[in-house]
Amino acid sequence: MLGEDVIELDRERRQRLPSWSEIVDGLRSATSDTSDTAVEVLKRAKGRPVLQPRCGVGGHAEMLDLLRALESAGAPDLLSVTIDSHTRLRHFATADRVRRENPAQLNGYPLVAHGWERGRELVAAVGVPLQVRHGSPDGRDLFAVSLAAGITSFEGGGIGYNIPYAKDVPLADSLRAWQQVDAVTAELARSGVVLERELFGSLTAVLVPPSLSLAMTLLEAVLAAEQGVRCVSISYPQSGEVHQDVAALRAIRAVAAEYLPADMTVFTVLHEFMGVFPAGRDWAEALVHYGGLVGRLGGADKVITKTHQEALGIPTAAANAHGLRLARAACSPLLDFVRLDEGRVAEEQHWIEREVAELVTPVLERPRLATAVEAGFAAGTLDIPFSASVHARADVVPLRDPTGAIRYHAAGALPLSGDVLRRQHRLLSHRTAALTDEILADINYFADRPPWTAEKGQVPA
Amino acid sequence: MRDTTFRPRRALVLGVAASDAHAVANRLIHLMLTEQGFRVRNLGVCTPLAEFADAAAELDAAAVIIGSVNGHAVNDLADLPGLRAMGRLACPVVFGGRPSIEVGGAATGRARLRELGVDHVLDRAEQLPALLDSILAPVLTHAG
Image (cartoon, rainbow over all chains, first blue to last red; front, side, top):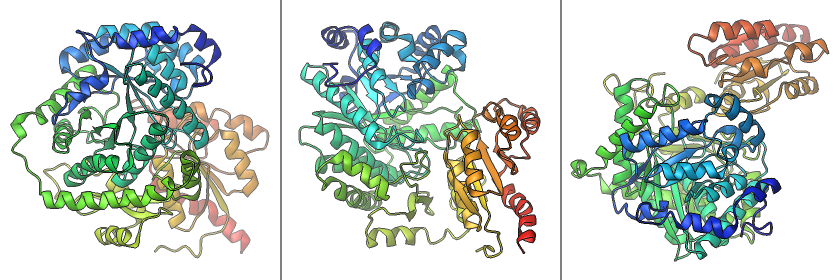
């Protein structure tokens, strides 16, 4: 089933992979007394999110050490293999050269260069499942090597791993690559191995309006369903305003029930705040803790954790484990007394669901979805703010309202209704300074606003 | 709104250095300059120096503005002397961002960029409008 008719791979790499039946057996052996697949771990969440850190370094021995250190010091439910940027862009030869000469220069683990046999050593080194996290517009070879390594979770999709990450990869190419990944995922499920296929709703990770995140992952989920996939994880980036974030996490389930096949399992994932972190340790820790609590309040099945060192660079293993423990404490019964204004959450959720419907309905009504997505981005009826890609207009401009919730200041050509846009403009009527100053203040919302020096709404210029 | 009427119509070329995919600052600076009445062609992220030269020639640009925050700017701009020797990129080249990610490496990074022929090295986007006005001013006078 890794045949050329299903998924196109580099010819030499395909020849070095084990046979399909060996790959399936390897993935099945992940389901044993001593270990689980990623999906089995997610099923255990039941109201308290399972926790996973990001982690990846260039050297193999160093990666083994990192995974073991995080497992023993942070007790994660899942661990990540974060992939370096050369591999993400399919510069496999460069990744291979750098990992031989100076692996510390890589910003992640070059799994394709290290090879699937070493990937199996990573899987065997720890007692929790691994997920490959990357950012590849075309992740097909990386996917095949991940499967051969026995890794049961793979992140990405044809929109969220292209538009925020690559300058000039046509959507037709990335969507086609990910349709092939999904076709293999569906075939594996028929063989009894259900992968976690997480869709990356964080996009550019800067001031992403919730309905835009949900619309993009929903379209990717429908595309996956077309290929036969019946299990996806849909991730959403914490905005920082709790009612909006809880509403968005709940809205994932509502829109999934509306637009996805009835037999599709959907796990919800909260990415703890992905934007500019405060440099001070105590305020950064408060933000990490807050993220865990938001995930629990929103009923997320999984939370991807952050660390108090985000503002300083790539975190140490100790800081990463500490972030896991903070999130664990935030999700514990200790804070079960916390209640939100449910009316406010319901109001937010109503509008998020309405906005998602307005964004995706015109696309889903077209006969061929992948073509419709491509046409939508070309016309600006699908768009994301601050995109790296020339294939998105980036005419959408987000800002925070007085509570900190993220709103549409400018919606570009998005097909949002008058009712939606009037509400958005009303909520932003106080934002009258020069637009770039307002955007900068919002990007630095947490970094510039230590809780003991400023009230909400008094953002330093 | 600020004065947009009196800004010369001569084009500026904006973009991010070849190895850098950070789009947010680039999008913001494009927005800021457009709001203030500058005419900007934005080449976006991951732009090789030769593409800056091509766009500058095509538009007869008054200046080229290159951003980078990933610490590889000196490497990404290494071809500047070669291009200039061929008579390309004759207009002022403005660099903005972090010339080096090493702690305390900014001064060295700035010096190396100046050695390559970068005309102006800025570390804050807010410094851009005044600098661009000073670059555009003689053109305005000349154009009457």
